Length: 146
Image (tube, rainbow, N blue to C red; front, side, top):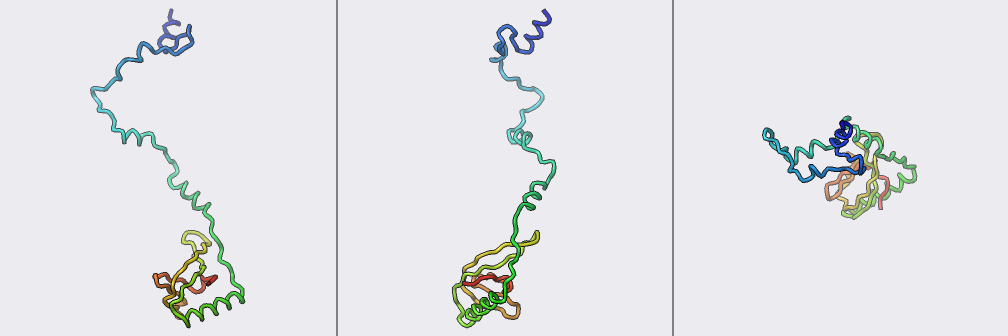
């Protein structure tokens, strides 16, 4: 008898091998008289994922981020760039496309960017090419001009 009662209390009908919850399935949900129901936002936060190592994922992503090393231009390429820069100085207001190196602020290396714009001036003292949109590019970082 005790064995049968124990099986009945678990909701498992040993004879039919089915879960048998007919005795409680239609009962109303119990509501506490002492405690107000928890707001849905707090319940959602309760089950939010937990990151034990704060910043660990960001560190992994930063380490996986690929940077390029600066290309060393040979003398011939430097000479070609100088000729193109002299042409730009002699004919201001030209629309050009250039490829230049941007060092990465967080790790060694950087990336190459392509920019199209109209040359405003070349500051020979600071060795910077200035475009009309205000972009300032160091001449030593330029690798290609078209």
